[in-house]
Amino acid sequence: MKTRHILISFLGILTASWAWDALYMNTMSGDWPWVAQRHGLHLTGVWAISLMSLAMVLATRPAWLEEPLGGLDKIYKLHKWAGILGVLFGATHWLIKLAGDPLASLIGKTGRPTKDVAIFFAQSWRSPAKDMGEWAIYILLALLAITLWKRIPYRPWRMLHRAMPVLYLMVVFHTVALMPAAYWAGPTGVFTALLLLAGVVAAFMSLARRIGRNHCHAGSIVGLTQRGDVLEVVCEPDERWPGHEPGQFAFLTFDRAEGAHPFTIASAPHTDSRTITFEIKALGDYTRTLGQTLRVGQPVVVEGPYGRLDYHLGREDAAQVWVAGGIGVTPFLAWLESLQVEPPKTPVQMHYCVRDAATDPFIDRVRTLCASTPNLTLYVHDGRFSQRLDAETLLASCSPIEGRMDVWFCGPSGFAKSLEAGLKAVAGPGVRMHREAFDMR
Ligand SMILES: Cc1cc2nc3c(=O)[nH]c(=O)nc-3n(C[C@H](O)[C@H](O)[C@H](O)COP(=O)(O)OP(=O)(O)OC[C@H]3O[C@@H](n4cnc5c(N)ncnc54)[C@H](O)[C@@H]3O)c2cc1C
Image 1 (tube, rainbow, N blue to C red):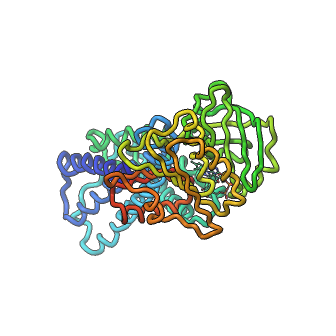
Image 2 (cartoon, rainbow, N blue to C red):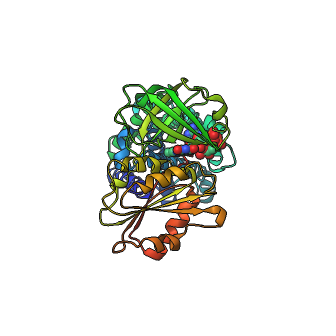
Image 3 (tube, rainbow, N blue to C red):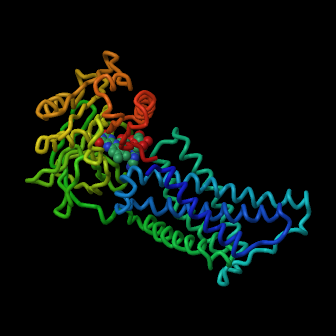
C-alpha cells in the first residue's frame, strides 16, 4: 500500500469519527461563520495531533510493521509525511485560531458558540496549554523548514530532530487541556486517546534512547578491505543474531558519539558462520573517515536486520528486471550470492550502471556471480562511454509478460523516478517498481 493511500485512509477514519461526534452527537449553535471556524479549529487539531502521534510511533522502528508496510524504508517515508502533514495541519489550526480576531471585527462576537469545556482534570490548564501549543508550532515550523531544506547537512539536522519528542509532548499537553470534553466520550476521543498513549510511550522511548534496543547485537569487525572509495567491512554479531534475508540492511554503530548508520548487508547468510559483509562507500563526512579509523577486532553494534527488499515477493507471471546504480549494487550482491545455492526459477535481466567499469570495485564480482547463475543475464552500462540506461534501453533487452514487469531497483532516487516514469509511459501501468530508499531524511 502506498504512503499516500495509508495517509488518506488514516485521515478518512479520523474525519468520519470527528464528524460523528461534532456534527451528529454534539451539535453546536451560533452564527455559521463562527461555527465553521470552531469546527475547522477542532478538525485540524485532531488531524495534527493524530498525524504527529503516528509519526512519533513510526520513529521507533517498529519491526512488526515492516511486513504490512513493506519495509523500514517505507515506514520512514510514512513517518516523514505524517510528520510534515501533522505540522502543516498544526499551523493551519493556529491560523484558524488567529482568524477569530478579524472575524470578530467583521461580524461581531455575539453569534459565537459557547466556549469549549475541557475534560474535568484539565480545566485549569487552559492558559499554559495555549502558550505551549503556540511555541511548539513555531519551533516545529522552523524544524520542518530545516528538514525540507536539504542544504542543511544531515548531522546538525539529526541533532535538531532529537528535540521532536519534547515538542510532541508539549502538543500532547495542549491537546489534553483543550480538546472539548464531549469528544473524549465518542470515537474521536477513543482514537485520540489510543494515539496519544502510543505516541507518549514512543516519545519517552526516544528520549531514553531505547529505539531499536531489542534489535541491537554486540559484535566485532573481523575483516576490512579497501577497494577504491569503498570499504568492505566484515562483522560478526553475537549469537543472538537472528540471521538475515538477502536484501536486508542493518544500522552499524562503530562509535557511540557518531551513532548508527544504515548499510545493506551485501552477503547472503552463511550456514557455517554469523559473519555479514557491508560495502561502505565514502559518501559523506563520516563514511570518508572509516578507512583510517576502523580496525580489525574493534567492537561494533549491529542493529537489525531490517527491510523487505526481496525479489521472491514479485509476481510469478511478470518479467523480472533488476537495476543497480553504483553503490546500490549491495543488495544485489547478497541476492546473487544466495542464487548460487538456489538459482532463479524464471529468467532475470540484471542491469548494472557504473561510472567507469574499468575501475568499478564490484564489476568483477558481479560478472563472476552472474556467469555462474543460470537464468540470469547481465547488462553493464558504463557511464565513461555514455551508456545510459533508460526505459527504451531496458525494454529493448526484456519485454513485459502480458504487460507485467517487476523492476527491483537500488540506486539514486532521481534515476529511479525517471526510469519508473519512462517505463510506465512506454509499457503501461503493469510495470511495478520495487525500491530501497537509501535516504532516510
Ligand atoms: C536502507 C539504507 C541502506 C544503505 N546501504 C548502503 C550501503 O550498502 N553502502 C553505502 O555505502 N551506503 C549505504 N547507505 C547510505 C549510507 O547510510 C550513507 O551514505 C551514510 O550514512 C552517510 O553518512 P555520512 O555521515 O558519511 O554522510 P553525510 O554527508 O553526513 O550524509 C549523506 C547522506 O547520508 C544519509 N545519512 C547520513 N547519516 C545517516 C544516518 N545516521 N542514518 C540514516 N541516513 C544517514 C543522509 O541521507 C545524508 O543526507 C544506505 C542507506 C540506507 C537508508
